Length: 98
Image 1: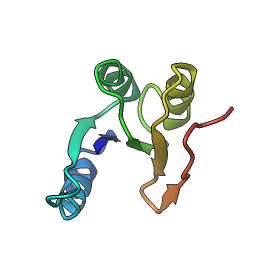
Image 2 (image 1 turned 90 degrees about the horizontal axis):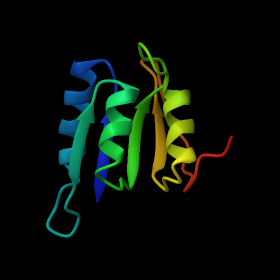
Image 3 (image 1 turned 180 degrees about the horizontal axis):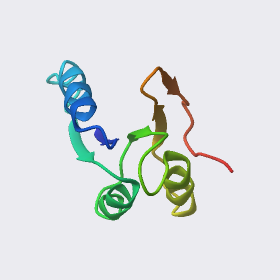
Image 4 (image 1 turned 90 degrees about the vertical axis):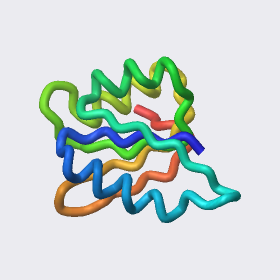
């Protein structure tokens, strides 16, 4: 499974990566890429068809909402899991619709 974490908080990215590593078992191999801006994620998404993206709502520059919209416009089928410092909002959708 190919996952992306996109958050401008480097510490949060590292922490989430560690938590996801617990699910990286023999039958569930996980590949996790980290990005620290929406723009970086969009460049990376051109090279990899992610199964899911953990996406910060409020980042400098391109917001998580704008990034999700751009992914949807590219016909990405990645599930989007929005992150926020105070709580996690999970939208389990195969396509984000605007």
